[in-house]
Amino acid sequence: MTKFPLAVIGLLAFSAPVLAQRVPPPQVPVDPHVVALRDAALKDDVAYDIVEGLTTEVGPRLAGTEAEARARAWAVAKLTALGFKNVRIEPARMQTWVRGDEAAEVMSPFPQKLRVAALGNSGATPASGITAPIVYFASFNDLVAAPDGSLKGKIAFVSNAMAATQDGSTYGTFGAARFVGPAIASRKGALAILIKSIGSDHSRAPHTGVTSFPAGAQAIPAAALSVADAENLERMVKRGQPINLHLTLTPHQVGETDTGNVIAEVPGTDPAAGIVVIGGHLDSWDLGTGAIDDGAGVAITTAAAKRLLDGPAPRRTIRVVWFGDEETGGAGSKAYFAAHKGDHHVLAAESDFGADHVWRLATNFAPDNAAIADRLAAALAPLGIVRSRDKGGDGADIAPLVGAGVAAVDLNQDGTRYFDYHHTPEDVLDRIDPAQLAQNVAAWTTMLAVVANASEDIAPVAAADGKAR
Ligand code: ZN
Ligand code: ZN
Image (cartoon, rainbow, N blue to C red; front, side, top):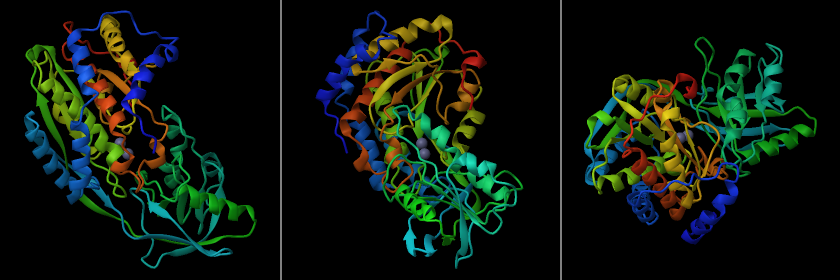
């Protein structure tokens, strides 16, 4: 694990003008109050305390399960102890899936065990498993091109190499094999599907994640092989002999259970100025302890709000939301939007891309609010953060708000190593670098200090500028 000492953050500040040559930081003055909050936050230890506590005292917290309920109780106690106002749980209901036993083994011609993890919503094999020949697809597109019925009685194996990128853009492209590959294989008659993990590592840790089957489609057993095991299976395929594989997956749908959002506020002095909503998701996959996904996100946003809570009251109310169920279907964000769409939200932002440093700012302010974006860019530049020419508004939990025209700010984190650990047993506290975590808190504190105190009105954005996804 690369460490990222504070001294390097200083170097990054030097390199920012070079990186940002095409979009230089605007030469606008930065409010000394913002500077003081930003620089103090580089020594933040509240975020680390939150993610350390959550991963140690709760651990994995799969959406809809008893563990997620324990996480909500933990969150209420923590947010209350930190001094936040209006701390509460807003319950919601969801369809819940839980993992069972899982094992995969090549029976012939090269007998050996492979490491797998079922995908969320995977169907089950009999407890004794299934044995079937595999059909190899070098890419997702090759699976799509397979004739209907051609996979009958077979296990589809979709290989699909994903490269690491700073902005994580390869996830959307290669993730299709996981998001919809199982439904496509089911439609073509497959008995089951194995995909190469959607990950940029070469370890034996499989990457889980949700898949979905449309109404009427049979939920076939669907699992991810670790990248290393998928590569081994590819080498077997290249030897040209038929491969028989034994697969056991016994997850099940448990029906409707409780999830919920945990909400806390920093009250503003001017109720007419609207609400700034920030947060991340409290639920996690069950293989690791959900440190980078997304214990870090709730920790970063809460620690930043705490810095505003402890200073002079901001003009706008800051609402921190620890969303329930993001991972398996988004019941948390849907429930939040249903309950609060009438609230006067003026800005939304979420942190859900690990714990490595923020490197880029993207916004989607209305043209009349361009000066706020300029002040943000100027205030963030000393943290090594450059300005994107793309519009902001990414993130599953804020998507309904952004789709409804609420302005958004993205503080993009460096995703170079995020997909090495994402949704694996390796998503644990040890993957978090405290210095980079603190740089995140400094960026979020800066953002809040600028937007929550902006003297101008923050306008809704045109639907076309939102990124409803
Ligand atoms: Zn996440
Ligand atoms: Zn996730």
